[in-house]
Amino acid sequence: MKIVTIVGARPQFIKAAAISRAIQEFNKRSKTRLYEERRIREILVHTGQHYDYLMDKVFFEELKLPQPDYHLGVGSGSHAKQTGMMLEHIEIVLKKEKPKIVVVYGDTNSTLAGALAAAKLNIPVAHVEAGLRSYNQTMAEEINRVLTDHLSTYLFCPTGQAVRNLLKEGIKDGKKRIVKNVGDVMYDSILCYSKIAEKKSTILKNLGFDTRHETRVTSYYLATLHRAENTDDPKKLKSIFGALNEIGKNTPAVLPLHPRTRKMMKVYHLFPGFKNIKFIEPISYFDMLKLEKNAKAILTDSGGIQKEAYWLRVPCFTLRDETEWMETIKSGWNVLTGTGVKRIVNEVRHMEGRRRYLKGDGIFGDGRASHKIVQILVREFN
Ligand code: UD1
Image (cartoon, rainbow, N blue to C red; front, side, top):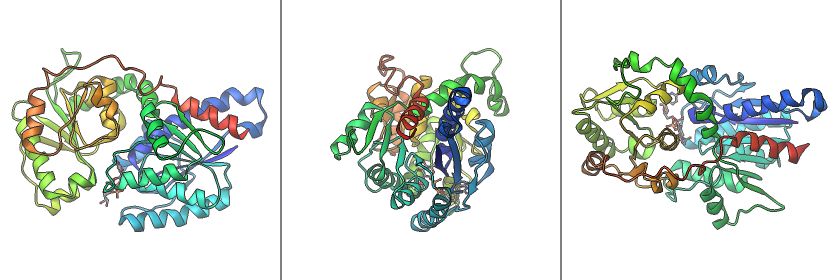
């Protein structure tokens, strides 16, 4: 069975690596028992949306993702240009490869382009991380995920809430579509890699944190910021940096800088400044897991990092007005702060007094989401 996997942006490399591992395991198990044609042949298509070494190749190396069979080289550009160019190139690949199914991940322009190209050729689409909603139509990601879900035949949801979100839009499990809560493939990934990251990553030493005595080094906050709604609005960007700088007075805030954020800081003349924020280059997956695990708290606008904070039991503050991951808010481990200085600083100051619930494990599955997805696909197509 031939499948085409479409990736392009940093979080997709992590998600696709989990499924690739599950495919490899299935193929190994199937070697002796099954016929050759029942094994899965995965063709990996990289749109090129992310292309810097630290946004791209380092993830392939660490996660041992197979090299892409096709690299489309569609880098930066406006949404229409990026999506349009991807669409054109993906169609050519799909016509040549004629896969049984196309697998797309998350909510980026690469996701939408992959889903749309496949659907127009009547090739079934499998959407991993289906059913998420922020209900904020001004986000490019919300547009991408809604359209992708409506184009998909196999909707692999990470949570029960995601299944319910789809139901509200008339997308349900049945004859026409498979809609399943399989759990979150990023949870599979963290279970597989957090111990390895702990051993392999030297990021704490590199940043000069003392790692000799403590099991958890909590002498810094970790921050990440990359959402267009925050980075492309000078008022919000300045306000968030102002808050991080204030929080960082006693305990510094470490911020690996996404290229979009770096670019906008230059545009708004925000360099140099904010002396309590330690800006560093983007970091690898292993370094990120290690920095997250040892942080006093995490401040972020990333979806994936909100979940990682929850799994690692690190308090998280989400620098947005809404989130797709309401489960983490209900658990007490994540707080929506918006982007105003006062609110962010206050929430972080009152961190210790907040009630958190350790119950609720299992919200994101049992760490076998990728295996469940492979099983469903094999059952359907073999
Ligand atoms: C994209 C996704 C977002 C996801 C994020 C993960 C969309 C609409 N957004 O946002 O959902 O959370 O990836 O990181 O698909 N750039 C570089 N080098 C790179 C990549 C980007 O310099 O390797 C710069 C370019 O100036 C580019 C800008 O960053 O114009 C934005 O990149 P783009 O791929 O358009 O979207 P992201 O902001 O990364």
